[in-house]
Length: 198
Length: 195
Image (cartoon, rainbow over all chains, first blue to last red; front, top):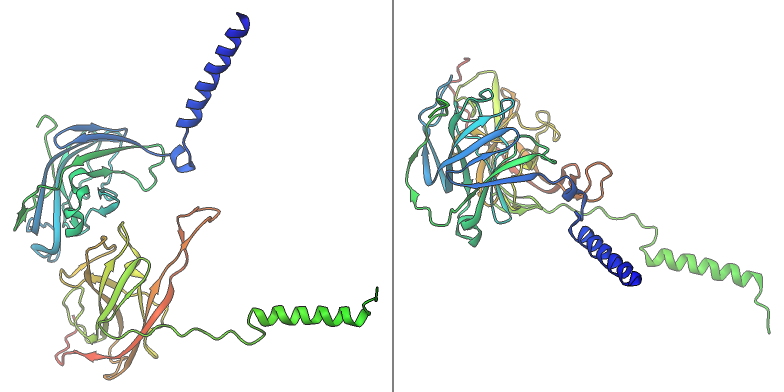
C-alpha cells in the first residue's frame, strides 16, 4: 500500500513537473513579454498607465486636415494611393502624460505605424495629465494588399507607451477592417480635451 | 620495408601546402567586386527598401519652405522608395547619398527628407506603400555648376545575429550596394531674392 502511494506521488510530481516545463517560456523574449489587455471597438481598456477606448474606425482615400492650428502653412488634404485607416480614440493617462507615437496597427504579420502627417493639435500633441480624457484620431496609411488579406478581419491596434514594452501592459483593440467601405474624403477633427463625465 | 627519406616528407608537406593554397584561390589579390550600376528610374531592391532614383536637380527655391534665397542652392534627389519588409522602416534616411566634387561629401546626410507629393517631412516608410521622397542637400549658391555629374550610392543594411548586446535585433552600418551617376538638371530661377 505504501509503495502504491509513493508511486502515485511520484507520478503526480512528474505530471506537475511536465506541466511546468511544457508551459514555461521558451525564449528570453517570452520571459519578459508584455501583458496584452484586449478589447473591441467601444470597450474601455484599462492598463497600468492609460485607459483607452476606440470610438470609431473609418477607411478613407483622402483626409481633410484643415483643422491645422499653428505657424506656417500645412496641406489641407492628405491624399494617398493606398488607404487611410483612421481610428478615433478617447485616451486618459493614469499616472503621467503618455504619448501615442508608438501606436501600431497590426494586420497579420504586417505592422503599420501611426502617421506622422496629422497636423497639430493631434492626439500626440495633447499630452494631458492623469485623469484628463483626450479625444483625437490616429491615422494609418495601409496598403491595399494588407486590407485585402484575410487577416484584415482580425486587425489589432496596440498602444505601447514606450519603446521598451518588457513586462508592461499594452492596451490592444481588436478591429475588423475587412468590411469597411472607403469614403472619398474624411474630415479629421483636431484632438481636444474633453469633460471627464462625457 | 623501405624507409621514406626525410626530403620526401619535406617535399610532400610543401606540395600539400601549395595544393591547399591553390585550392582556395592562391595568393592573387582578391579582385574588388564591381558595384551594380543602376540607371535613372531603375529600381534596386535591397533587404529593407526598394529604391529608384527618378530625378536629380538643383534649385534655388527651398523645397521645404518654398522660399528663394540668393545665397543657397538645393540639390534635390527625387526617389521612389518602397518598404519591402513587414514593419515600418526608418532606413529611408540612409538609403541614398550623393557625391559632388567640391560640394557634397558622400558621407553627408541630407539636410531634410520630404514626402514629395505632400511636401511634408517624413521619417519612416510604411510597409508596402510606395512613396516619392525628396532628399535635399543645401549648398552654397553656384557651388554646383550646370552640367555637373552627380554620383549617387544606394545603401542597404544587414541583420546581425547573436550580437552580445542587441541579440538578433542589430544591423550593420549602412553599406553601399549600388551606384549610379547622372547629369544635373538645373532648374534655378533667375529672380533669386534673399529672404
